[in-house]
Image 1 (cartoon, one colour):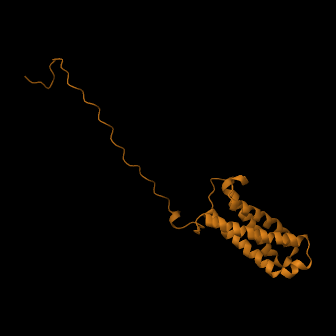
Image 2 (cartoon, rainbow, N blue to C red):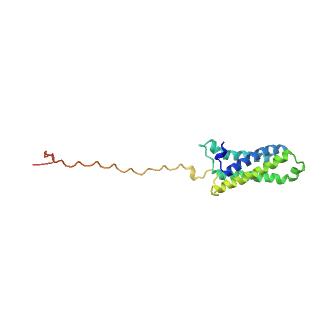
Image 3 (cartoon, rainbow, N blue to C red):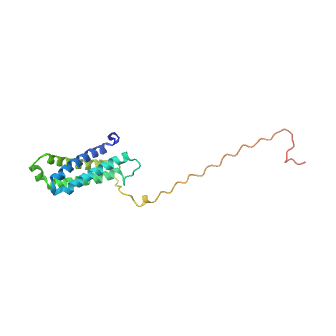
Length: 172
């Protein structure tokens, strides 16, 4: 896990994912009404970390789509979930503000950062959505046949000798 090899949007996604995972884990225990949604955001944060670091840790492993497309799906979904939880618990969050409320707000901010970083990575790849395998890619590619090799050059012919010795093709 080398952060120096990541792009700016990938680093931003890592920071947002870590904030979401830590904040959502604490917030899930503090706000029992939204326990499942908050844990789902934490799982999406872990998925974002896997999307970013898996190609670096295991170069032979292929992601099921482009990295930017996967990042935008995971990031936007986490951002929407945590924004929904924030809007439904806004009065409860600030009523008894404590450490768990602060970590909940950090989880919301981290999910929003993940969504923004996923969008930036998606746009950097050209903005074309590519997730999963298409039907055309399931067929193995046809191997290319190399062009026929040119025939080897003919050996140079021997010049006739003037030795005066009779040859086989000379007839009297």
